[in-house]
Amino acid sequence: MQASLKLLSSYIDMLKNNGVYDNTVIVITADHGYNNGERI
Image (cartoon, rainbow, N blue to C red; front, top):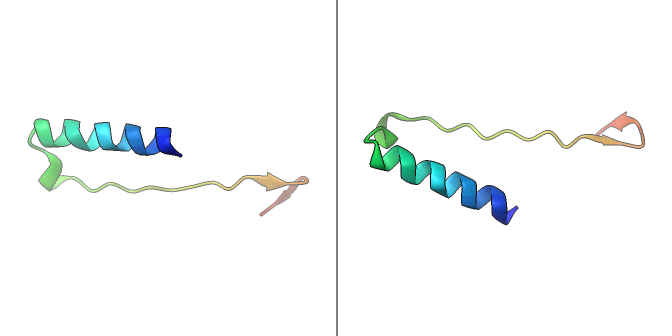
C-alpha cells in the first residue's frame, strides 16, 4: 500500500508542476478479487 501512495503522491506532484492539478479529477477504484473461486 505504501508503494501505491508513493506513486499517487508523485503523480499529484507532476500534475501540480505542470499546472493542471486544479483542473483534474482523480478517480480511485479497487477490485478485491476472488475468494476460493467466488467473487467477493
